[in-house]
Image (cartoon, rainbow over all chains, first blue to last red; front, side):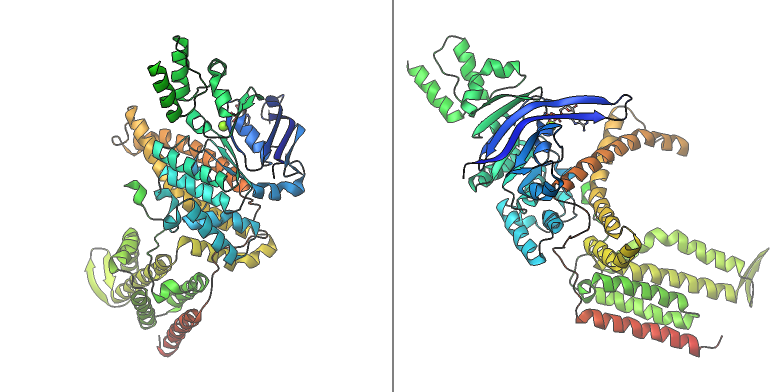
Amino acid sequence: MSENFIEIKDLRFSYINDLEDPPVKTEVLKGVTLNIKKGEFVAVLGHNGSGKSTLAKCINAINLPESGGVYVAGMDTIDEMNLLPIRQRVGMVFQNPDNQIVATIVEEDVAFALENMGVAPDEIRRRVDEALKAVGMYEYRMHAPHKLSGGQKQRVAIAGIIAMRPDCILLDEPTAMLDPKGRQEVMKTIKMLNEQGVTIVLITHYMEEAAQAERVVVIDGGEVVMDDVPRKIFSQVEKMKSLGLDVPQVTELAWELQKAGYDISTEIIDEDECVAKLAELLQK
Amino acid sequence: MIKDITLGQYFPGDSVLHRMDARVKLLLTAVFIVMLFIAKGIEGLAVGIVFTVAAFLISKIPLKMMGKSLKPIIPVIIFTAVLNLVFITTGDVLWEWKFIKLTRDGLDTSLFMVIRIICLICGSSLLTYTTSPIDLTDAIEKLLSPLKKVKVPVHELAMMMTIALRFIPTLIEETDKIMSAQKARGADMETGNILQKAKALIPILIPLFVASFRHAEELALAMECRCYHGGEGRTRMKQLKMSILDLWGTLFCMVFLAGVIAVNYFTKR
Ligand SMILES: Nc1ncnc2c1ncn2[C@@H]1O[C@H](COP(=O)(O)OP(=O)(O)O)[C@@H](O)[C@H]1O
Ligand SMILES: [Mg+2]
């Protein structure tokens, strides 16, 4: 099935601060149109405050559109009846692993969403074990979350989401607070889930992570400004820099070489490719 | 180091007491407290002592854990003992010095009170030693659930307890970090009188307070994303289950309760 799983149509959204008088309105999303197909792996880039988190929260009905619409598997987020079905189908993982773990024991935490959904105890047990095995945290099921490393905590948080068996997972900078090892663990888990057919929307600040996606969406000032495969996005080094974003190190290297007059394309996003291109260049 | 603190004071194990249903244990602890308080004389209390010692032996909790739970109340014990010794002045005088008069009755009563407090603490800490915090909150939720009819937010209270337990280590860690950060900026927390020390706490408490609000906001969001919508229609992965052990435990407890009542009845005062 390759129909659109998430449809965002001309979405506008503002935060309204009632504490001020008169209320202050911050317009964050200014007409976002974006379709995401089932099974896609989309990375979302944009500098701080560009509205990425706000957009993610619009997708699982935490934020409701001011105008325009958001549809998840055809369900309108504005309809209260769709709230729980949408949240069950679109799970969300946040930046700080400490603030999304509810229970005092790993397996209890993974069970939390299923308990909320009213799943039968035997079925919860089965799905919790399955989810913990999928993220490689099964041996830690009886541990206290505060004794785990950041990467492990984030994997527990992901397990808590996949236990719901969602069709899509939104990850809002899941690796921002992790060390390189933790980042690697989390990225591996995300890619494994995508291979199993879960749609992934990954908000990130790490260009190396975005380069691993199938598609990159760049947001600036509450609008989608770029939307293409990573190779095409990152080869536009100047444009990315003007948006306050980086490109992967290898792309940057190719770009600097190109600027210095060497004949090399900037359509390079991974190391092996870069090595091959450089070898080619040296032989000339 | 600070990360190693245990939640509550659960001491994992596999004794009969560990395997009993948390609800039953909670109720039996209440019965135990009643048992101690209806005992009129030292004879009735002796039954309570036997019960406490028996429960302790069954639980297989190391003796030093008991010492640990008694330690913080030593001042209370001493205070009670002294108070009873000094203020009860009836009965045979044992020792006299200026206006202080120690009497037979005073000694008896203070001994009685001290033993009662020790039994009370040891017995009830057996509950927390043998029951995990999760089972305990579950049991409280279940036992209080009839109160839902009169609009007491039982589920919410249990949820709050769970979250508090979950965040205690996080907040302790945070306090540690904030303290280091303030010390690095030259804050002095060790010297000065009580007032100055209390004042030095302000730059720690305020960031901690702000941080807990941020935790709360993000946690609420994460809970909502995981379909949390209150206690309605919620199931639990682990069900509390009663077994034959609970029946035996209850019988055991009731025999001792009856024992205390009988001793009360037969000892003339
Ligand atoms: N709860 C809120 N109330 C008011 N303004 C907010 C709130 N959350 C975010 N904003 C504002 O919305 C803008 C976009 O924020 P956000 O979506 O978090 O950006 P990003 O995730 O891309 O860094 C920022 O200017 C931020 O200050
Ligand atoms: Mg953000």
